[in-house]
Image (tube, rainbow, N blue to C red):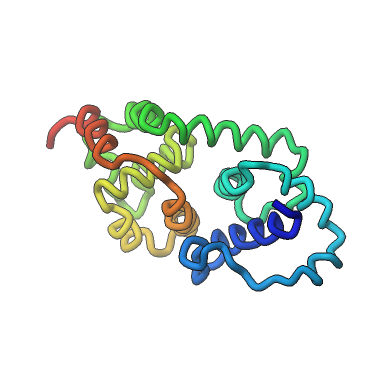
Amino acid sequence: MTPFEAYVLYCALKQHFTSASYDFNKYHGKVKLSIESFEKRGDRFFYAKLAKRKDLKEYLIANFIATGPKIWVGDLVNSVDAETIFMNWKKRTQSLSYYFEEDLKNCLTNLDENLIIRDNQHPHLLKLFLRKKISLETLIILNELLGFFKHWNKKLSDDIIWKDVYIICEKYRPFMMYDINKMKKIALNIFEPA
């Protein structure tokens, strides 16, 4: 990968996570950038360092979802924090079913009690995520199984915290790979029947 290609990937993923209209997968990571403008950038040596990573796309995704898409490229290069974030993300996504099951053990055993919104307060499941007791992946998988985000969007329409969480969930979901049937079986084993 060339430094310019690393720059394009960085910009495309950043735009994916910050723009409501841009979809990285739909546009195949293409953005309008010129090599001439890149050559004039003072920070191009950061992209030269990033270009050496074989796992750059995953590295960028992990850091964008953990720290926000406004992260500066210099904070991604030779950063212990960025590398730690990536290693934790990699560990979590490679053993997703294990971490999903462990996260569900932090939930209330009655599934509905995790999802109910009372008096415009955050539901228990969202509180668990905000307290880092469950991962973003778990929140996304549970929504795919149950479809509760629509309800939360109606009930929490004025809640800025939920809006930010919802956007990152929607933007991150296309990059997640997992067996939905396996996750369904895990959830059925954890939660008591209604």
